[in-house]
Image 1 (cartoon, rainbow, N blue to C red):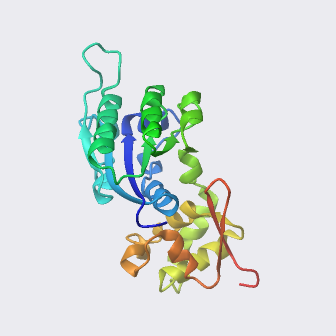
Image 2 (image 1 turned 120 degrees about the vertical axis):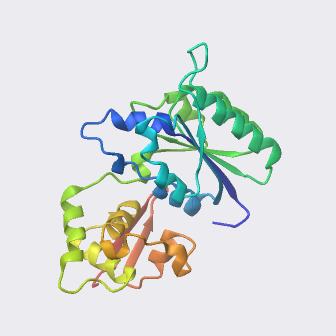
Length: 257
């Protein structure tokens, strides 16, 4: 992605987390945001503005504080409701910050909004009217307003970016750490994970499998000189990358590998 494209990421974190807590067996570890940033940087530009909105005094949300801090996301504290009790304060602050970016940061070309709330519809329309590309990432089908999907320039559901856990394959891949000879490099580990899976894997799931191995839990492709996760994967001779039309990235071993 060209360096002259810049993205503002605005997360209605309450909207995202509350959608997840409705799911049976929910654990905070299900919610991973690094793949969202990787997806945006792979397809749209550098994510230079990052804010998340929630009542951070609530344990449901502050359980993710360390993850957000590690990704350089500024956490904006909001009250749960405005005084009239009718509108989520997160929506108000998110909208205000988006308009501020529009006016004071004209170099931002793309706005990524993580929310399924119908109230963001007018904001999407306003940003588009100023020539900005608007990417909306909705939590799931049940929590995302239909008209928001239709308004966005590009729309993705969260799980289309962050592949849901697959327990059987996770055990296989994670068991690599228990072998007599552990992979010595992340490149070797990627190849072994794909070989154990026996089929193509979503790029986001592959990265999660890699970081599930204790030796690579702090893996960061930028520390190895690669701007993106996909560029790191492309450097591995045995690996094949397929970019789907829905912007998903599928990874497999080349035939004969």
